Length: 413
Image 1 (spheres, rainbow, N blue to C red):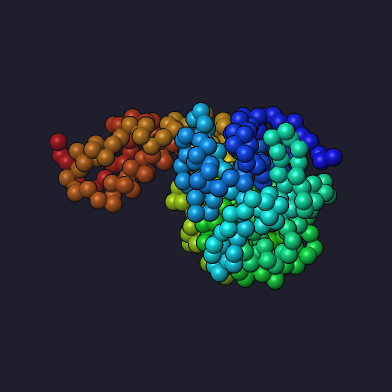
Image 2: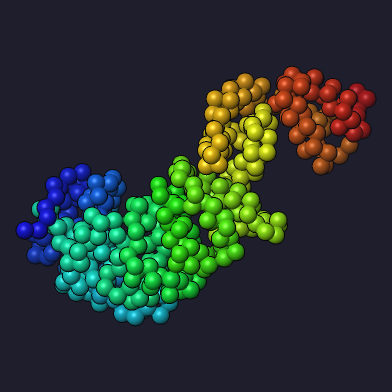
């Protein structure tokens, strides 16, 4: 008898959708990652449903639908404010771009649909009663901790080259080994990764970096030579190897990027590493790039000076200061969380806007036109207040700036 699971949690919430399709005379199953994670007793946040019903038939069954990918058989169904993606069983043609099929053919067979999926552990389905359908021995591989391509790995990776990055990412997230033939195939097909959009590679790489066992994923990237075809990583093997020694988990993706920057900067043989240029090649958002570079620079200061001082904590803010401090653990040094919190709590001011002096005050105090001198004076005043060299008082700050000759052309008023 097939293995049977209890239908609970998010599966129970989605069950009426599955039943409605079945009651209309079609097959419907939970498929893919949600079933895999349920079998691994991991948290399941959403479900995917596959069915023998074609898109137009799904639209006849449900009153509220959205055509999110109807050309590939996917229709979004809205039920009581919750959306479910329902995809018709399908087979796919050739993949000229190694990412998207040239065409898809809708079929009525679940097994035909499952055989086009990437790995055996993702080619498992569960019906409305909780019975498992596992035509490619995915449960056996799950139990053994193995990532194995469905069928011929060369075909799977030439259909979608991103699957190679998914393999190393799953290794980092699940602490699984990549099966030998699958690993050999990744190594042989690694150059195809250059056919994939950087943004898609970035998503998988970030999941790898933040995986509990990111060392596994990085080791697999090196063994399969995938890293050679990722942005800016071809000559960064030493930094990646160094990262493999790190067993600490990153709490946020910005920390992972910052620590990777630190390791690359440490091992870069040319001594000309440009952190922002590196991250731009990965097409990170400006916000994430700014955060990663800020934490990276702070970590370098922390390692050099053995402590974050008042100005550094002020500039970082409490959250990022603590995140920087936590990265020290990845360098096998004790973090000083309490010191950082104490410094932050005793700062005279905690944000730039709290400075008692404004740019308008400076303009009133001088006959000189506004210019770069203003930003330099404001920065100097801010540092002096943060370091408690002077009180956060407008008149005292102006007096200090005058003494330091940081205000040109004073008015005589």
